[in-house]
Structure formats: C-alpha cells, structure tokens
Length: 115
Image (cartoon, rainbow, N blue to C red):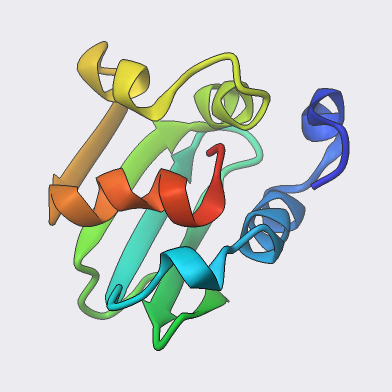
C-alpha cells in the first residue's frame, strides 16, 4: 500500500487493492469466507473479499451472502490503515460495527496485517 502516511491520498479502491496485495496465503490454510466492507462517509464505498483455497479476490459492490460484514467510516478506516486505530479498539468503542462470523473477522489481521 506504500508508506502508511500516504493513506489519505489513496482512493478506497487503491486501499483495498493494497490490502489484497498484502495477503499472506500461508496464513489462510482452511480459511473459507466472504467478508463485506461498508466504508461510510465521503470517499466511502462497498467492497468484499473472498478468501478460499489460500487465495484472496477483491470485488466492488455487495456480496450476495457474506459470512461477516464490517461497517466503518472512511476516516476511521484510514486511521486503521495508518495503524493509529486497531480493529478491536474500533469495534469496542463503537467506531466500527461488525456482524456475522466474528472468528473470521478476528482472523483477518493474521492474513492481511493492518487493517
């Protein structure tokens, strides 16, 4: 994704593409999920990732049947990408909402890193 300080200059699509490029297939053994991301506010959008067979694919829009959904503002998403806000902290403080298979969401950090 480039230097973390550059996050504000990236489009949301570029941020997700960078996240997918950081995918660690060796950490995704047996991981089969669809995660929906809804980034709200100016510059927001909807993307989802499909993780299966140690591969990760990115799609724009809404997944038909996601296993988990994350809803967070663009500002907080940027803070998470910069490492200034952790996913657990965002969730516990109500700055991020999450639904579905929470175990899948908790595993995301190990297969992608931050966020």
